[in-house]
Length: 476
Image (cartoon, rainbow, N blue to C red; front, side, top):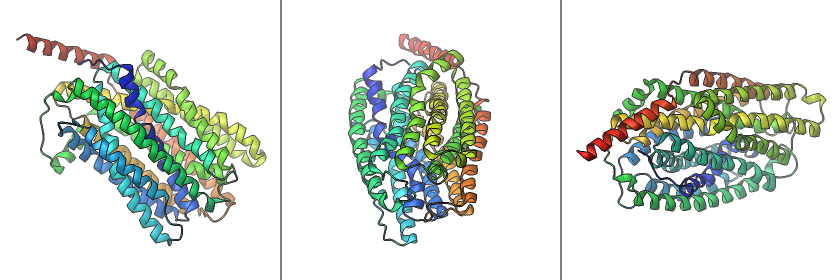
């Protein structure tokens, strides 16, 4: 089924995730550093809190996905009602998390973080899972799906860059490790801006999609309603893992997510305590990372058209591994190179990693959407929300395991946030966590994605067959 999705519709759908992406990226990138270095919570406790909340986020994704599949509200339709109420709750909770009272004892800070993260992840599910499934509803066509995912990716990466830009303006200009106690006010200001953007762009997108879906009767197709049974949901999850292409994309992206967790969660510790960069310098190198991802989007679109999505994705992951190798070289010689010179050397290395990472923000989602679309054509039931929930459950589970491991590893190497200058053994430990963690799991991701078998012709063939059958039914 083809859609008449115009540029305006795709643009507004994509920009709707800008504030959400910035808020999520701030949590993902900075919460481990904020908890350990700014608030003084042990790495293991921060890891436990973030891992539990991330795991809950994964568990709740299929639940909300199932509910959105089986909801047909007269005003909001399937997805938009969940998204509308979710963003208001997210905006409030986001501010609360970063406003943690510094006077609380460590156990009090841990509980504040745990409860806050559990609450915001629940609200995130109400927005994020229906938002991802909405793309499949709007653009079931193979080529249109690639285009709408491209719009989503551009604004998503822009949202990922924004926290680094905000960090540049609102964090102390000297080393964070020296002035960590003064950093909380900067995080609160960033949270206020993120919450404001989430509401502004999210509501514009919801209004636009509501008008489009009602005008084109997107929710008028009949979908077999299913009563909620947790056992059926669990069985459905294991059923899709038995299907090769579902499994390859889900596990491949999950391994890549673990690699990303090692890079982003420990990256701030690495640049602060090993390279001794100031917060503006760290902001700039992070901007280089995400800037490379943005600039590389036309490149990966071109390669995916010439070579198909799977080969483009494998090339991108290999590029990241090479970029990690370049950073390893800078790490080994960091003691012999002045900080300012090292800063200028690190920037192009991060740009190179960003170029490789660019494909990771669009191609896996587009490949998964193709598999889901094919399944919808075969069964006649639109369970995109449930399928999206299964996808996010797996990579959130992987992310929670990674963060838990990272938290304990920080304690094992004896990282101490009260020490501006870490021992050489701690610095080497931070380097090993980042480099080995990224390389191992990126290699596993390549192995999984290489087994993906769905081609463009498979989806187009199924679309043509379905359209022909629909025309024959209409004639009869």
